[in-house]
Length: 455
Ligand code: HEC
Ligand code: HEC
Ligand code: HEC
Image 1 (spheres, rainbow, N blue to C red):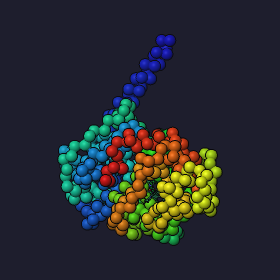
Image 2 (tube, helix red, strand yellow):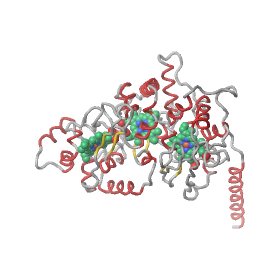
Image 3 (cartoon, helix red, strand yellow):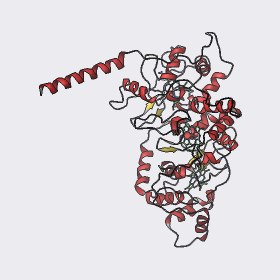
Image 4 (cartoon, helix red, strand yellow):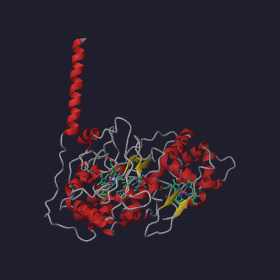
């Protein structure tokens, strides 16, 4: 007994020492990835463009729209994490950060006082930024952004996640090597363009932060296309960020021009953007240069897997072919089941009985990843609340789908959703009334998030 107590005491002591080391041992910070002269300055506009590529505005915009004033909560399962004020205000912003302090945030998730930052700030992906982009960003935030004295609410997650030194251990296992390695050699045709696409997607664009699945400790399962799970679909804020790589997914069916168009305008002949992706388009990709959009599209095309992944949805509902669906909806049989009847009454006018919608206006529901996602939140939330395509420079008007949550019961939404998930060749699991009820209350409970920042 006494021996056991001694062992426990020893273990507790080791625990305390480890914690103290975690708190007081200085961080090992990543070196610059390129030696640039101390007086190197970015070209005019380069820093602002790096900011656009990284979508810094999407998260760091102030509640009243003040650029980079911070304060918007990023919803996390552990509570809201507030985005910092990153204007050059010396007291409330990052005015006191040196270039090295700034790089430590972007590469290592460490602030100027040595605190570890939550990975809601996507430094796991920004670790691939070039030194030129880091310098450009630093110059932009210090010289071109107006200081704001907005004081951001302090993030306080529940215990033990409020202890920031825990993030340090997480980073040891969750981060990849810093720096970007161009994956394509000269023997590949178009290598320069493909490498630019790889840089944009893996680095500043941080597409993997949402589109790559995460493991049990919430680390991204891969940061480059060498990892087979990179960009094969993740979940963000309850929505599925679809697989972008597998054969048979929508993006692999689109040609490169259509992909570039989707990123530039939030819509193309097949799809309309929604959920968190809407903000990506609104603050970031719509302003990317044509060359960068095409490079991204070429890279995504190049890294497509040529084998279709087996569907992991529990298949409890028979799937109807496109022809069977069109016939069923066209017959207007009085005995028609509830799902298709609700579709005819509520959806058919815009999305049509062939489920193909209208190019650039009403998205196609056949083969649509939001419709057939393993977690149906995106589809159900769209039915309940409606959706709006963002206004972009190419399409300045906003297009709205009305919400149906006020007139359809949970049961009805479930029947309708199950129908569209299995019509026109779609083949996905049923949605239950309990799923719908859960999603309704999750929407009501979610704090004014990232998502609302746009309005
Ligand atoms: C997905 C949302 C998101 C994006 C995109 C994002 N950030 Fe952040 N950022 C955050 C959050 C949240 C924090 C605060 C993290 C914490 O408190 O641990 C933060 C913290 C920071 C900090 C630390 C500030 C301080 O006072 O400690 C800096 C600097 C920063 N971000 C710069 C940027 C830049 C530059 C970009 C664009 C290249 C960017 N962020 C993009 C969410 C984001
Ligand atoms: C903040 C999270 C987030 C980030 C970052 C993000 N996406 Fe998305 N993306 C989503 C979500 C959620 C959807 C599903 C909603 C939709 O289809 O509009 C989506 C949808 C898409 C689609 C449509 C897929 C389909 O099958 O309809 C494409 C293509 C896409 N994203 C590409 C990208 C690229 C390229 C990047 C990086 C430049 C990126 N995304 C960054 C969350 C994100
Ligand atoms: C008045 C026309 C209209 C009606 C009626 C309508 N929609 Fe939509 N729907 C749209 C528009 C416009 C969008 C694009 C908005 C967006 O994606 O942000 C859209 C988007 C969607 C999306 C998201 C597609 C994607 O790629 O992200 C789904 C799913 C959807 N509708 C399903 C339905 C269902 C189910 C019904 C019937 C309950 C319905 N819609 C009724 C116009 C309509």
